[in-house]
Image (cartoon, rainbow, N blue to C red; front, side, top):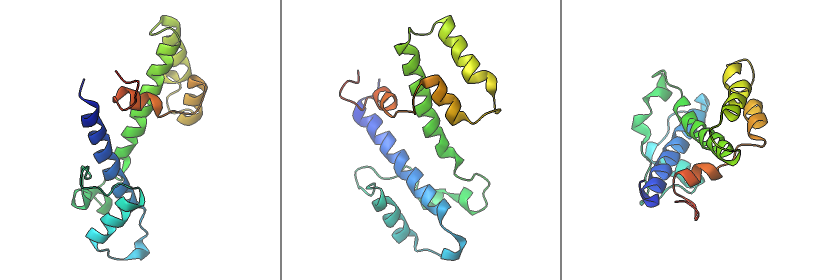
Length: 147
């Protein structure tokens, strides 16, 4: 396993890039041209992410998808998906592990439904509560109890 400081750095640089990307993506067309450096500083400061120790993985020049490149900021949904993956795994481990019954429950409540229902309520019904950042932080070695 990688050291937690490395994993924390990786998460920090990704969250900083995601924040910057989303702020550009959310800017109304009426805002007009922006000073890129000033915009980046403001966006990162708004979330406490403007640090020299953990710069964003990607800066503004990387985000060509915002300006008609065809990839509208959906990439950062993967971070949310990773959190749900860690939550689901934590549920399995708290309920006896990777048993046939647990797998069938996951299949019946999530996998078999495809895009027929909103995934938020489906996941909450499976998990028994709203998603929780704890298992993701644990998996990344960023908690006091991480192994």
